[in-house]
Image (tube, rainbow, N blue to C red; front, side, top):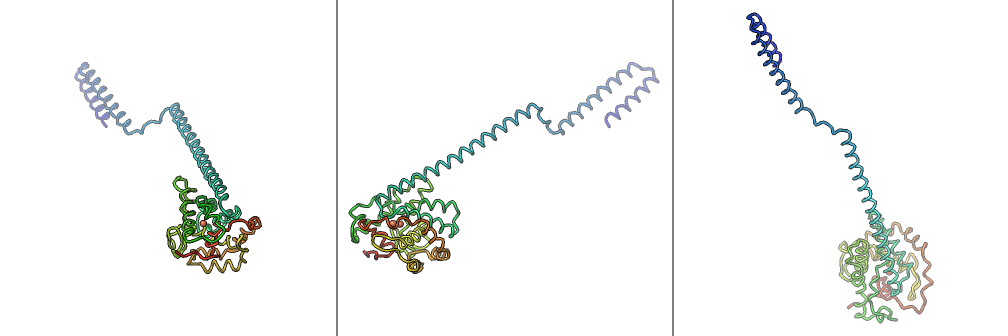
Length: 314
Ligand SMILES: [Fe+2]
Ligand SMILES: [Fe+2]
Protein backbone atom coordinates (compact mmCIF):
# COMPACT_ATOMS: atom_id res chain seq x y z
CA UNK A 1 0.00 0.00 0.00
CA UNK A 2 2.83 2.42 0.87
CA UNK A 3 4.37 1.94 -2.55
CA UNK A 4 1.13 2.40 -4.41
CA UNK A 5 0.39 5.66 -2.60
CA UNK A 6 3.90 6.97 -3.16
CA UNK A 7 3.85 6.00 -6.81
CA UNK A 8 0.52 7.78 -7.28
CA UNK A 9 1.96 10.83 -5.48
CA UNK A 10 5.05 10.79 -7.65
CA UNK A 11 2.99 10.61 -10.86
CA UNK A 12 0.77 13.46 -9.72
CA UNK A 13 3.82 15.60 -8.88
CA UNK A 14 5.41 14.69 -12.24
CA UNK A 15 2.31 15.66 -14.20
CA UNK A 16 2.04 18.90 -12.34
CA UNK A 17 5.74 19.70 -12.87
CA UNK A 18 5.53 18.77 -16.57
CA UNK A 19 2.64 21.06 -17.06
CA UNK A 20 4.42 23.78 -15.22
CA UNK A 21 7.77 23.07 -16.80
CA UNK A 22 9.52 22.51 -13.51
CA UNK A 23 11.80 19.60 -14.45
CA UNK A 24 14.39 20.12 -11.62
CA UNK A 25 11.64 19.87 -9.07
CA UNK A 26 10.33 16.74 -10.78
CA UNK A 27 13.74 15.07 -10.58
CA UNK A 28 14.08 15.87 -6.87
CA UNK A 29 10.64 14.51 -6.08
CA UNK A 30 11.27 11.31 -8.07
CA UNK A 31 14.55 10.66 -6.26
CA UNK A 32 12.90 11.25 -2.89
CA UNK A 33 10.14 8.81 -3.81
CA UNK A 34 12.66 6.19 -4.86
CA UNK A 35 14.52 6.52 -1.55
CA UNK A 36 11.25 6.23 0.31
CA UNK A 37 10.27 3.10 -1.63
CA UNK A 38 13.61 1.51 -0.99
CA UNK A 39 13.23 2.20 2.75
CA UNK A 40 9.77 0.66 2.79
CA UNK A 41 11.06 -2.43 0.98
CA UNK A 42 13.96 -2.73 3.42
CA UNK A 43 11.62 -2.54 6.40
CA UNK A 44 9.33 -5.18 4.95
CA UNK A 45 12.26 -7.48 4.26
CA UNK A 46 13.42 -7.03 7.86
CA UNK A 47 9.95 -7.80 9.16
CA UNK A 48 9.79 -10.95 7.00
CA UNK A 49 13.17 -12.03 8.26
CA UNK A 50 12.00 -11.69 11.85
CA UNK A 51 9.02 -13.95 11.12
CA UNK A 52 11.08 -16.49 9.25
CA UNK A 53 12.29 -19.52 11.33
CA UNK A 54 15.98 -19.88 11.99
CA UNK A 55 17.58 -21.20 8.92
CA UNK A 56 19.01 -24.74 9.26
CA UNK A 57 22.73 -24.96 9.65
CA UNK A 58 24.67 -25.48 6.49
CA UNK A 59 25.32 -29.07 5.44
CA UNK A 60 28.83 -29.19 6.90
CA UNK A 61 27.48 -28.13 10.32
CA UNK A 62 24.87 -30.92 10.14
CA UNK A 63 27.57 -33.44 9.42
CA UNK A 64 29.57 -32.27 12.43
CA UNK A 65 26.54 -32.48 14.71
CA UNK A 66 25.65 -36.00 13.58
CA UNK A 67 29.27 -37.05 14.09
CA UNK A 68 29.20 -35.74 17.70
CA UNK A 69 25.86 -37.49 18.31
CA UNK A 70 27.17 -40.78 16.92
CA UNK A 71 30.23 -40.53 19.19
CA UNK A 72 28.03 -39.98 22.25
CA UNK A 73 25.79 -42.92 21.35
CA UNK A 74 28.85 -45.15 20.90
CA UNK A 75 30.25 -44.05 24.27
CA UNK A 76 26.96 -44.78 26.00
CA UNK A 77 26.82 -48.23 24.42
CA UNK A 78 30.36 -48.94 25.61
CA UNK A 79 29.38 -47.79 29.14
CA UNK A 80 26.34 -50.08 29.11
CA UNK A 81 28.43 -53.06 28.01
CA UNK A 82 30.97 -52.29 30.78
CA UNK A 83 28.17 -51.99 33.33
CA UNK A 84 26.67 -55.35 32.32
CA UNK A 85 30.13 -56.92 32.46
CA UNK A 86 30.83 -55.37 35.89
CA UNK A 87 27.50 -56.68 37.20
CA UNK A 88 28.30 -60.17 35.89
CA UNK A 89 31.74 -60.04 37.55
CA UNK A 90 30.20 -58.88 40.83
CA UNK A 91 27.65 -61.72 40.67
CA UNK A 92 30.41 -64.20 39.92
CA UNK A 93 32.56 -62.84 42.79
CA UNK A 94 29.65 -63.19 45.20
CA UNK A 95 28.95 -66.75 44.04
CA UNK A 96 32.65 -67.61 44.46
CA UNK A 97 32.62 -66.16 47.96
CA UNK A 98 29.52 -68.13 48.87
CA UNK A 99 30.97 -71.38 47.55
CA UNK A 100 34.25 -70.88 49.40
CA UNK A 101 32.40 -70.18 52.62
CA UNK A 102 30.40 -73.34 52.04
CA UNK A 103 33.63 -75.27 51.72
CA UNK A 104 34.92 -73.77 54.96
CA UNK A 105 31.61 -74.45 56.66
CA UNK A 106 31.57 -78.06 55.50
CA UNK A 107 34.82 -78.68 57.39
CA UNK A 108 33.06 -77.93 60.66
CA UNK A 109 29.57 -79.23 60.01
CA UNK A 110 28.16 -82.72 59.92
CA UNK A 111 25.65 -81.76 57.30
CA UNK A 112 26.58 -83.06 53.90
CA UNK A 113 27.16 -81.04 50.77
CA UNK A 114 24.20 -82.80 49.16
CA UNK A 115 21.94 -81.71 52.02
CA UNK A 116 22.93 -78.07 51.70
CA UNK A 117 22.58 -78.27 47.89
CA UNK A 118 19.07 -79.66 48.24
CA UNK A 119 18.16 -77.01 50.80
CA UNK A 120 19.21 -74.42 48.22
CA UNK A 121 17.20 -76.02 45.41
CA UNK A 122 14.12 -76.55 47.57
CA UNK A 123 14.34 -73.00 48.91
CA UNK A 124 14.40 -71.68 45.34
CA UNK A 125 11.36 -73.75 44.41
CA UNK A 126 9.36 -72.77 47.47
CA UNK A 127 10.24 -69.10 46.93
CA UNK A 128 8.86 -69.30 43.37
CA UNK A 129 5.69 -71.01 44.66
CA UNK A 130 5.35 -68.19 47.20
CA UNK A 131 5.33 -65.66 44.34
CA UNK A 132 8.90 -64.38 44.64
CA UNK A 133 10.58 -63.33 41.41
CA UNK A 134 13.12 -65.57 39.73
CA UNK A 135 16.04 -63.31 40.66
CA UNK A 136 15.27 -63.55 44.39
CA UNK A 137 14.68 -67.30 44.12
CA UNK A 138 18.06 -67.78 42.40
CA UNK A 139 19.79 -65.69 45.07
CA UNK A 140 18.11 -67.70 47.81
CA UNK A 141 19.31 -70.93 46.17
CA UNK A 142 22.87 -69.67 46.62
CA UNK A 143 22.36 -68.19 50.10
CA UNK A 144 20.36 -70.99 51.75
CA UNK A 145 23.21 -73.57 51.84
CA UNK A 146 25.08 -71.22 54.20
CA UNK A 147 22.40 -71.37 56.88
CA UNK A 148 24.73 -73.09 59.36
CA UNK A 149 27.98 -71.36 58.41
CA UNK A 150 28.12 -69.92 61.95
CA UNK A 151 29.00 -73.35 63.30
CA UNK A 152 32.53 -72.42 62.27
CA UNK A 153 32.59 -70.39 65.48
CA UNK A 154 31.22 -73.05 67.84
CA UNK A 155 33.90 -74.72 70.03
CA UNK A 156 34.68 -78.32 69.20
CA UNK A 157 33.77 -79.40 72.73
CA UNK A 158 30.20 -78.42 71.98
CA UNK A 159 29.92 -78.88 68.22
CA UNK A 160 31.48 -82.33 68.31
CA UNK A 161 30.24 -83.41 71.72
CA UNK A 162 29.24 -87.10 71.56
CA UNK A 163 26.09 -86.66 73.57
CA UNK A 164 23.21 -84.33 74.34
CA UNK A 165 24.08 -80.73 75.12
CA UNK A 166 23.47 -79.12 78.49
CA UNK A 167 21.26 -76.02 78.56
CA UNK A 168 24.39 -73.85 78.81
CA UNK A 169 25.91 -75.63 75.84
CA UNK A 170 22.67 -75.12 73.93
CA UNK A 171 22.94 -71.42 74.54
CA UNK A 172 26.36 -71.51 72.93
CA UNK A 173 25.12 -73.67 70.06
CA UNK A 174 22.31 -71.23 69.35
CA UNK A 175 24.86 -68.52 68.71
CA UNK A 176 25.71 -70.18 65.39
CA UNK A 177 22.87 -68.02 64.02
CA UNK A 178 24.37 -64.71 65.13
CA UNK A 179 27.93 -65.85 64.37
CA UNK A 180 26.86 -66.79 60.83
CA UNK A 181 25.13 -63.46 60.33
CA UNK A 182 28.22 -61.67 61.68
CA UNK A 183 30.43 -63.48 59.17
CA UNK A 184 28.16 -62.65 56.24
CA UNK A 185 26.72 -59.22 56.92
CA UNK A 186 28.12 -55.78 56.31
CA UNK A 187 29.54 -56.23 52.83
CA UNK A 188 26.75 -54.29 51.15
CA UNK A 189 26.56 -57.10 48.59
CA UNK A 190 22.96 -58.27 48.13
CA UNK A 191 23.74 -61.98 47.97
CA UNK A 192 25.82 -61.93 51.16
CA UNK A 193 23.21 -59.79 52.90
CA UNK A 194 20.56 -62.38 52.00
CA UNK A 195 22.80 -65.20 53.24
CA UNK A 196 23.27 -63.28 56.51
CA UNK A 197 19.50 -62.97 56.87
CA UNK A 198 19.05 -66.71 56.31
CA UNK A 199 21.81 -67.60 58.78
CA UNK A 200 20.24 -65.35 61.41
CA UNK A 201 16.61 -66.40 60.93
CA UNK A 202 16.51 -70.08 59.99
CA UNK A 203 15.73 -71.16 63.57
CA UNK A 204 12.97 -68.64 64.19
CA UNK A 205 9.54 -70.22 64.58
CA UNK A 206 6.20 -68.91 63.35
CA UNK A 207 4.81 -69.00 66.91
CA UNK A 208 7.62 -66.85 68.28
CA UNK A 209 9.36 -69.66 70.16
CA UNK A 210 12.43 -69.82 67.96
CA UNK A 211 15.82 -68.17 68.30
CA UNK A 212 17.87 -65.99 68.39
CA UNK A 213 15.31 -63.15 68.44
CA UNK A 214 12.02 -65.01 69.03
CA UNK A 215 10.51 -63.26 66.03
CA UNK A 216 6.89 -64.12 65.39
CA UNK A 217 4.88 -64.75 62.20
CA UNK A 218 5.52 -62.42 59.29
CA UNK A 219 8.13 -60.52 61.34
CA UNK A 220 10.43 -63.42 60.41
CA UNK A 221 11.95 -62.65 56.99
CA UNK A 222 10.49 -64.81 54.24
CA UNK A 223 13.95 -66.21 53.44
CA UNK A 224 14.24 -67.55 57.00
CA UNK A 225 10.73 -69.04 56.97
CA UNK A 226 11.40 -70.81 53.67
CA UNK A 227 14.76 -72.24 54.71
CA UNK A 228 13.39 -73.33 58.11
CA UNK A 229 10.82 -75.52 56.37
CA UNK A 230 12.92 -77.10 53.63
CA UNK A 231 15.90 -77.61 55.95
CA UNK A 232 13.83 -79.63 58.42
CA UNK A 233 12.07 -81.54 55.64
CA UNK A 234 15.34 -82.61 54.06
CA UNK A 235 16.87 -83.50 57.42
CA UNK A 236 13.86 -85.68 58.31
CA UNK A 237 14.05 -87.47 54.96
CA UNK A 238 17.80 -88.09 55.21
CA UNK A 239 19.74 -90.77 56.97
CA UNK A 240 21.82 -89.48 59.83
CA UNK A 241 24.14 -91.28 62.23
CA UNK A 242 21.46 -90.91 64.87
CA UNK A 243 18.42 -91.90 62.80
CA UNK A 244 17.07 -93.70 59.77
CA UNK A 245 15.43 -91.56 57.10
CA UNK A 246 11.81 -90.98 57.94
CA UNK A 247 9.19 -92.32 55.56
CA UNK A 248 7.63 -89.55 53.47
CA UNK A 249 4.24 -89.94 55.18
CA UNK A 250 5.80 -89.43 58.62
CA UNK A 251 7.83 -86.42 57.48
CA UNK A 252 4.77 -84.82 55.91
CA UNK A 253 2.70 -85.48 59.01
CA UNK A 254 5.37 -83.68 61.01
CA UNK A 255 5.47 -80.71 58.60
CA UNK A 256 1.69 -80.28 58.50
CA UNK A 257 1.46 -80.72 62.26
CA UNK A 258 3.89 -77.81 62.69
CA UNK A 259 1.98 -75.44 60.37
CA UNK A 260 1.34 -72.31 62.39
CA UNK A 261 3.69 -73.50 65.17
CA UNK A 262 7.18 -74.01 63.76
CA UNK A 263 6.39 -73.15 60.14
CA UNK A 264 4.57 -70.45 58.21
CA UNK A 265 1.18 -72.10 57.50
CA UNK A 266 0.95 -70.52 54.05
CA UNK A 267 4.33 -71.95 53.09
CA UNK A 268 3.28 -75.36 54.42
CA UNK A 269 0.18 -75.24 52.19
CA UNK A 270 2.26 -74.32 49.11
CA UNK A 271 4.81 -76.98 50.00
CA UNK A 272 2.18 -79.71 50.43
CA UNK A 273 0.36 -78.71 47.21
CA UNK A 274 3.54 -79.37 45.23
CA UNK A 275 5.14 -82.03 47.40
CA UNK A 276 5.99 -84.13 44.34
CA UNK A 277 8.42 -81.39 43.21
CA UNK A 278 10.28 -81.45 46.53
CA UNK A 279 10.43 -85.24 46.55
CA UNK A 280 11.83 -85.08 42.99
CA UNK A 281 14.58 -82.68 44.16
CA UNK A 282 15.48 -85.18 46.87
CA UNK A 283 15.48 -88.09 44.42
CA UNK A 284 17.77 -86.26 41.99
CA UNK A 285 20.48 -85.75 44.58
CA UNK A 286 20.65 -88.30 47.37
CA UNK A 287 24.14 -89.66 46.96
CA UNK A 288 25.28 -88.67 50.42
CA UNK A 289 23.23 -90.85 52.61
CA UNK A 290 25.65 -93.71 53.02
CA UNK A 291 28.60 -91.37 53.51
CA UNK A 292 28.11 -90.60 57.18
CA UNK A 293 30.01 -93.01 59.36
CA UNK A 294 28.67 -94.29 62.63
CA UNK A 295 31.67 -92.72 64.36
CA UNK A 296 30.80 -89.28 63.11
CA UNK A 297 29.68 -86.81 65.74
CA UNK A 298 25.95 -86.40 66.05
CA UNK A 299 24.41 -83.16 64.94
CA UNK A 300 22.43 -82.43 68.09
CA UNK A 301 21.45 -79.02 66.83
CA UNK A 302 19.81 -80.51 63.75
CA UNK A 303 18.19 -83.25 65.80
CA UNK A 304 16.55 -80.70 68.04
CA UNK A 305 15.51 -78.59 65.08
CA UNK A 306 13.73 -81.57 63.55
CA UNK A 307 12.36 -82.45 66.99
CA UNK A 308 14.01 -85.84 66.94
CA UNK A 309 15.03 -84.78 70.44
CA UNK A 310 13.28 -82.04 72.40
CA UNK A 311 14.91 -78.65 72.81
CA UNK A 312 16.04 -78.31 76.42
CA UNK A 313 14.08 -75.73 78.33
CA UNK A 314 15.98 -73.13 80.34
FE1 LIG B 1 21.15 -74.14 62.21
FE1 LIG C 1 20.63 -77.93 57.46
